[in-house]
Length: 310
Image (cartoon, rainbow, N blue to C red; front, top):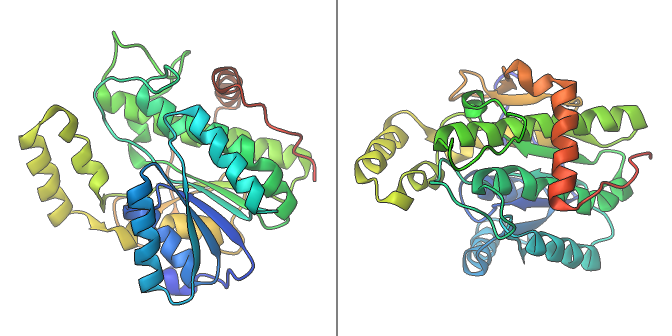
């Protein structure tokens, strides 16, 4: 994969992809490059205005691309279920699900269903979405993939028994790390299930390193932390790679031949560079922790995955 870039994405004609959080940053670039290489792409975004604007931008950038917007608010499980119903009505199969959307280092808050916001959006919403769309992924196999976008900062938070923590012990960066560790534990548990069932679907993960997107500034904005926002803006300008480069590990995991179950990709230098297999904390490969997360996620979301056999 040395020097791998978007020009090496295989032809995606005839494939359907869903990319969450596709209106900006890593998600937008991922959707654009998949569309550029022939995929039919559904942009799953919380804001209808921003989602439709992203569709318009994509159609200007990529001639004759097949893209559409569907509303998805990962902080509201009723929205996740509605998205799945809408998708199923229009698409017989799904070849690629990119669970990209997320929030970062927010003050303590709760989703519409009462979950801590970062755990609820970054993990539980995507867990539910994956389970609800899995029948369409099974219909597209072999070759279907699920890519969960984590972060190198998953190392900041090891999930505890309750996974999401409590308001009393809440630390915004620890909570972010927990949610990103949950993305990797979910990938691990999903990959184990696909392997045991002999399924032709591959579950992999990726992280963008340090990419210049609005996610970093958003981490300081909710509490008006102007100094933190200025520091992050400076870091984005000096240290970060552009979103187009940050999207490469995701695009590699989604499209490159030979990607195996539970592989995790990131930039070569950790924070920037071409995609390579990435280091990950040992707890994200813990079978027992993965099973606890799976059981907790099913209980909290009310979503039970269908049989994974081919």
